[in-house]
Length: 136
Image (cartoon, rainbow, N blue to C red):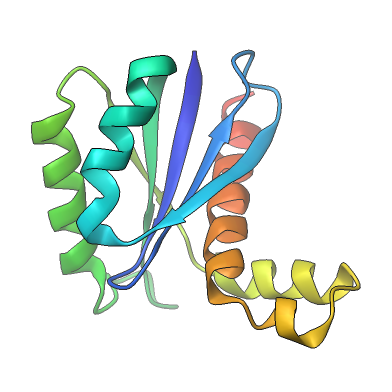
C-alpha cells in the first residue's frame, strides 16, 4: 500500500505518494483545497493508501504558525472522510525553501521555476521523503 503526503495551503495542496513498496516518493498533483476530497475519493477507488502524512506548519521557535489552524481543519476533514486511514503530522519547516532550491538546481527555465504548483508538489515529496527516512 502507498503512503500519501500533503503540503497544505489555503490556495493549493501539494500531493506526493509512494510507490506500492514504499521505496520512492513521487509528486502526484497540486489541487485546490475545495477539490481535495473528491480528488482523494476518486484516487482511492483505484489505489490503496495506508497512511496520510500532513505537513505541520511551525515557526522557528517550534510554535504553530498562523496557517496551523487551516491545517488542523484539513486534518479533521481527512479524518472524518477517511476514518480508516491513519494521519500523521510532520514538521514541514523549510520544505518550501528546499523545494525552491531543488527546482533552481534542476536547470529549469525561469518560468518553470516560478510555478507555485510545482513548488507545492515538490514540498510534498520532500515531506514524504523525510517521513520515509525517519521510519526506515
